[in-house]
Image (cartoon, rainbow, N blue to C red; front, side, top):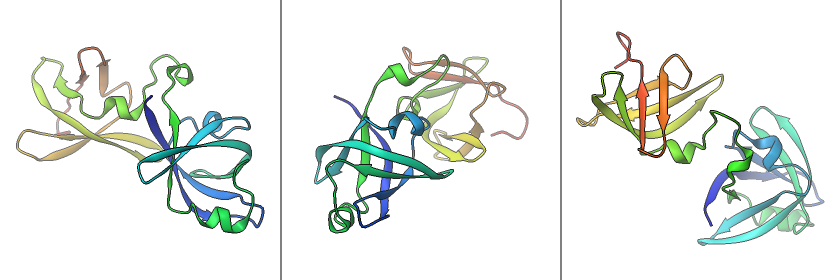
Length: 168
């Protein structure tokens, strides 16, 4: 099983055991919907949690009530823990990717010359950016959109980007 981080519990929200989660998933409405199964990671162990109800608090936060957490004290005991979901390609639509699948890919220009490697994906609302590290350890950002990203090839573990003056 492969787990993908979908958020982090930042605080308790009510005396009924609800928690406020900082969301790191692009599929939050699917991940946190009623009936979803998520996993709480503590001490390298994954504990299954079932979403009883949830609502979107704002752009980056959901409030979630898990069936297994029923009091304010239980909610407080899981603050600062990360929440995971099982990797499931069915949530992806055409031309969508999991961030975890992009990290580590080789980055090439349109002439097939290696530019660097994706070291992280940063979500600066409203634009997602790929952080790319060159061989000399210098880093630069590339907007994750169709203008700059011309091809993603997960099979060959590479991304082809359109380089414009000043990008690198």
